[in-house]
Length: 143
Image (cartoon, rainbow, N blue to C red; front, top):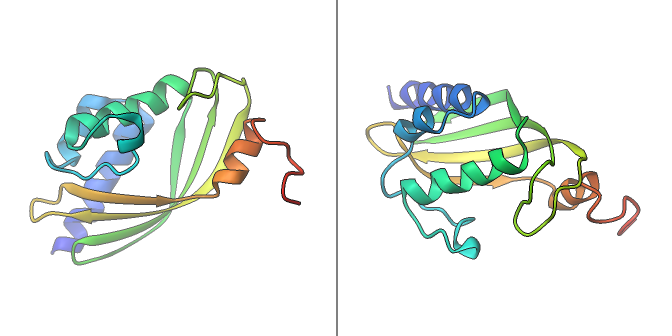
């Protein structure tokens, strides 16, 4: 069943992600994955661009960890609720390291091909809270 296969792919993905193992993440990703968040960084599209984007996260947040809180799969679509944590110890998207920790819940949708590989992912998270936790935007901004 496609839904079970896609759940398994994401379990493998997050196990590898938490080990910061790019080589183990790679087989979970389709060659032609869309990387919309990579475009502004000039990374382009495809597996290599996606893996480079993930590497940027690991460089900036060397203790980055993701906990899967909930996963629902239907056909080729999987919805996940995650908890991401990490410490900002390296530059990230032009933001110098702040040494501050973040702890955020994230909503995440992934679409899979017939081989179970991820061909699209759409993360949703509170970017304001993320930047506030890093100390980039004051805690009382927009309060």
